[in-house]
Length: 216
Image 1 (spheres, helix red, strand yellow):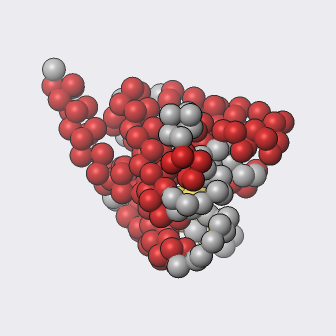
Image 2 (image 1 turned 90 degrees about the vertical axis):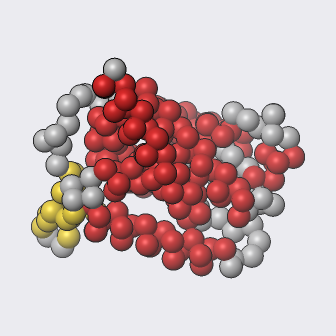
């Protein structure tokens, strides 16, 4: 099931941060394509290299969130961010949402690091941070309508079903990836799981902080 949109009738603010993140990802990807392999190895997150010298590689914790492997990678990630990010930003506010997004990205990276600490494979992509956005969306809008392309038509599906199936797929794939030995590239499923769980848990904090600010 490919999501193509959701119900935005309850949205109150223009999702400036979501739009800005999409623009920054696209810009960074264009620079990455021009810079080639050298740029990727410099600014992607490499677990073994980071553990060898965390201070020297600190920036890659953030730059890697805005890098992508190819057009399909960035296209699918930006589609998910565009569909689900605006509603989460609406609840958290612009600043809160940006902090939330970056924390989810860090949670994803450190989860992947835990399971691949000896790897020299460069880790890159916004998938972990966006997985955190999905975790927040699932918690706050479980019955929200997500429109998905299925066959030749588009049907509404509850967010609980769509995102729930997505997470189950990541979970099973992540467990399978743990058993793979050696430096094998591919999808960083554990980063997806880590980002999702981070976002789900942080939602309790950020949603509560936003409510307190509104009461003030």
